[in-house]
Length: 494
Image (cartoon, rainbow, N blue to C red; front, side):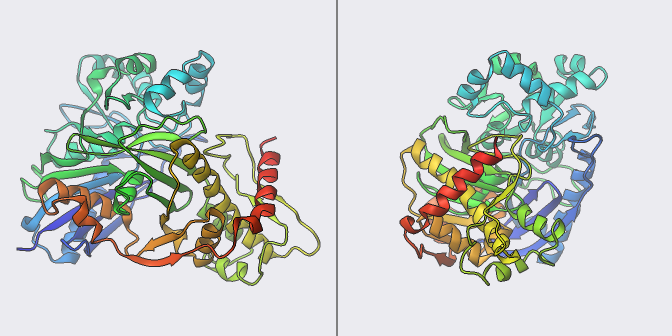
């Protein structure tokens, strides 16, 4: 009998669900957007009840479109927006406040005070993270301090904290399971990377009572079963969980140390598998848990650029140089190079490895000969140079030389960008036939957890490439462009 996996992808702007068969083919799907809430400038929230209702809706839609009997669902996998923070009442299941989204900057002052008091080295050593409001820890403290009676209720064990994976597990199991996987726990700023357990020291430092924290579990394996749902029968095992970027790494079949993927979306996320070796970064990268299967923990180095596809959106919406995002490839391809123009797309500051929130975008090298085509090409090159910076730092710190980079995300469909990227990195880029890699990762982890697949070796056979981009120029030829890029980055940070 054919077995099916239900993969839930709860993202920042929409909830999605997919029904996947044993060949990792998507045979049914559903998607529903939900409201983004902006109470103040720099603040971002989500309504947890709306996230749950949208999740139920897309599960029903995916099942209906697949025509699969829900009783044939062998397991559920979950992948989710990371760091977004919710707290709810253990008895009623009611959230005490809107969830605070990963993008929210409301705890920036708290993080600065912790930095000023000299705590960043300790936080970095224990968690692999930088002290930044991006992560969950200071968000939890804010909720407990700003919601009436919340801190007292938390101390009494009446409240539960969770990232979105934890909230969905709680709801799917009828409130019987309060758990998170190691990949999500590693993004809270509260987990000790070396032990994969909550750190009492960090909880005390960030003023988070351990009574609110979920149990940390492996990324693959049965961690609960559905109970009391209208859209699914009781007893379906929840068997796979990973944060979205870790799920994409798994979905790209990057199972061995030195294998890496880059997701090109609004921003870009480059993750390199470092195996069982925890590689601390001194170059502005994040050390994170990729996944845990059985007793084996796999680590990764991560670098993020805040602006990737968003730079193309700016060309469209801000400058009006193109009518739709896809036009940038055609426009940029009308010229052989950027004619000396360099664009650093620091439109929201610079992420790793620079971590300069005050940096601003800059275009240099403009002359009377510069055209909109040169600016379009410089935009694609700016996206690609950011990944060069990340990968150079990763290879330097891990001691691993990358053999190829697997790519996904909306902007990975841009063939010119991918070719430019291969030229700059001097390694082949491989784009898979199935680009829904976060969904595949969640499905793979869940299937492994219930025996649909016996090993990652079996899963490697299901991954197939769509197109391979190999370097077409030598590094010596692009050294002058590299120097122009470094000069422009320096200028945008001063």
